[in-house]
Amino acid sequence: MLEASLTRGLHSLARRYCITKIDYWGRKYSRLIDQGRDREPDGIDHSLEAKKLFPRYIVLKAILAELERYIPEDFDSFSEAKVKITQVINEAVSFMTKANDDDNVTRNTMSEERSSFVSYLENVSAAKVMSQPPLFYRRKLSVPEIELLWTQLNDIWAIKTRGPWIPLDGSQNELTLAFMDDYFDSEVGYELLRKFLKEHGVNHVYELRELEFSPEYELELSAFTPTYTFNGEGFWCSKEMDWVIYASHENSITIGGEWLINKVKEVWSNWESRLWLDWEERLERGI
Image (cartoon, rainbow, N blue to C red; front, side):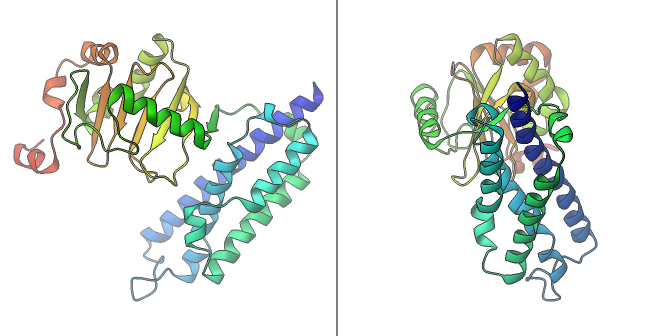
């Protein structure tokens, strides 16, 4: 029991460290941008100050994604968990870490962040590890799992691997509706969407992205927010495949599944006036 608690606590602590410091360094870099200090006078190259900041959250994002390949039950012991988590910290890479590895400053900055993380875990007390509350469930999918999900989405919903889909690809499906995502967010909201899914018996959701290098997940419903991000356009579904949501770079959110569409219509009396329009149509109509 003690061993299992330590293992769970260490995995949660490592994930929480990444999440907290990604946010911390990201906010610091945003302030640097706001102050106009992120670029050299030529407006192209990153400033020295920027190179000592942004690589920190880049490498932490890579580490977090690799940490989330594991769940605590994957480790046979606390010592094995510590060894594997340390290995992830030292070795995790991503498209973005590779893109910044040629510059001496950015490479050294990422190395510093890795070393700080390892040092933190080496010196953290057992009491702190044991006291870690569990984090939300999120597991990075394996390549075979991802391939199977894309195959199922294609077979059932005619979604090609990594999109695009309705409304951008010109296809139609009577069991889908595409809305303007800003109105969906403000007038329906993702909390209500999660409620509909929970009432339907959905506890875990799969998240797939258009960009092959973006991490893709199985996550608990509370962590589900179907929006376009820096990871690209997204698709969300569950193992039953009786619903799907697609968020595009053109400010659309597509709801697939008759039962889910009906739920949305029940609470959104003016849904017809919120059907997706491209930016030119929105500009013309003043929407």
